Image: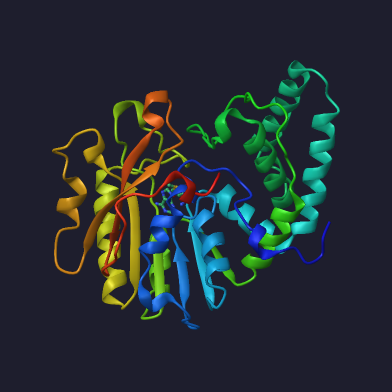
Length: 319
Ligand SMILES: C[S@@+](CC[C@H](N)C(=O)[O-])C[C@H]1O[C@@H](n2cnc3c(N)ncnc32)[C@H](O)[C@@H]1O
């Protein structure tokens, strides 16, 4: 393992539904000008998911003074804390699981091993390092890299189709860990991040999507639903961030993709000094293959931005 890994390698240690790697070029061109070179900058991401934007942001703007991240999913917040504080222990635990997994030579044996690890995870009786190692292992080997729990908070995703994934990537874990040293990690509802808002803060908000069609209603990363009322509560939160002097950028799916008359977000965010723009991005989590093409996403902010209408494929980073 390299002791001083290159920071440019930092990227999410988990695959997460709604991961924003694809939207990074659009987010980059949508950032407020005041961000460049601001040494007091505090970056806040209240719905962290896999942290694709966080890891990119901290490398792109290394002078960022500090960052605050949060997620309602406690396994996820715990995983970020483990990567931050105990990366070596994590690599050791994950490498052990990886070796065991690869010593099995039939898919049936690998599936049994997966189910055994899933059962162990669901006992909820393991320490934080093992919890995170199991979570990463399942994330790499489960169906589509989904994280889904049932009403008893039991992880219930079946074994996946990719039987030879890279399970432990020590370089990613170590580089992520270095970047996380200036990151405060919270867990729970996003509202608790409001106290960090001030003139030098930038909030990037990526809440669970408002489902764009009946067949794409994947939004249960935690055992909770993010419905229209929640979107309205989030809008109020954004107004409070503005009142404290913070800048924010919010992304969401565009309901106009499926219903041209659906102006839910346009109405919700109408008003002075709020800017609603549309960009095109590729979407991956979708059970319907024909729905995997390019669809419009919304970028809403409390500052003006200049967005190109579309990005060539070559400009979109690989997953
Ligand atoms: C669309 S995902 C974020 C994806 C992330 N931008 C990425 O690149 O991976 C939304 C996240 O919000 C979290 N979440 C849902 N409800 C929440 C709430 N009320 N407060 C904080 N986080 C919440 C989910 O657990 C999920 O990780």
